[in-house]
Length: 248
Ligand SMILES: NC(=O)c1ccc[n+]([C@@H]2O[C@H](COP(=O)([O-])OP(=O)(O)OC[C@H]3O[C@@H](n4cnc5c(N)ncnc54)[C@H](OP(=O)(O)O)[C@@H]3O)[C@@H](O)[C@H]2O)c1
Image (tube, rainbow, N blue to C red; front, top):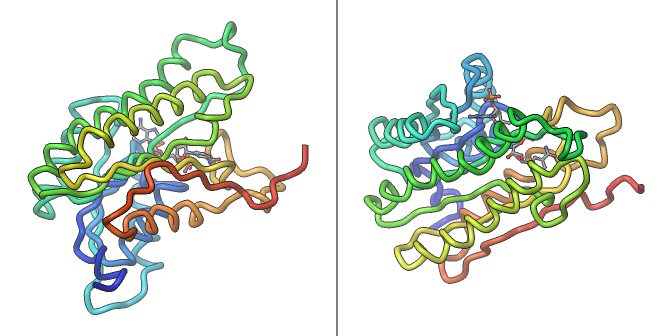
């Protein structure tokens, strides 16, 4: 089977698919002929992302499909609904990309508000838990599939002023490894992708001098490579870094 054929007609849910890395992953899956449900909180951003994915995809005989669902992954019920939407609209679920995430940077832990701590942990960790818990039964009904969790280098390389973010991503790494061991014998492949700095609006918008950063498409390509990887082996944790980061 050709590499694109492997993704054609696959049903994917991409959380946080309305901007940045998630939008690039959704567009890449759509371009490979997958049927993609993207979710996020802003309906305007979702509409924009689906238009952009359609505009960017090559014209082929078997184009993908794209659907949007306004979802807050911090809410377990909404996470469940997005998985159900994929099953109802496209007949099942093959791929979950847990990408939705936020950062709060610059405050020392002692100065951090409870609201900020909770927002980061609820989105980056609990959101991944909610979506995985909803997706595993759906993937079992399909006889296998993929869960790809977008973590961060910050999970293994914590830094000051980012305790909540670093802790949430370290927890995602641990959750991913535990889940991978629970479900791999059922053909459900769980991988974690941990990027370094990516040029997106994450954390407040692109910097003036962002040329050294990864592009969202670089991370999307890594996700696509994981989905097309040979079935015998499982790259369970992949780091991707800017090749020439700014010197400190
Ligand atoms: N950019 C980087 O340098 C970098 C580096 C390493 C890892 N990452 C990780 O990559 C992922 C994507 O980041 P990005 O850079 O692409 O950020 P981004 O451009 O800010 O996009 C974040 C996406 O997540 C969605 N989102 C946020 N909170 C959500 C919630 N509660 N429920 C549903 N969707 C939600 C956003 O849509 P709404 O706001 O409309 O909900 C948006 O679609 C994150 O997990 C981040 O931690 C980023």
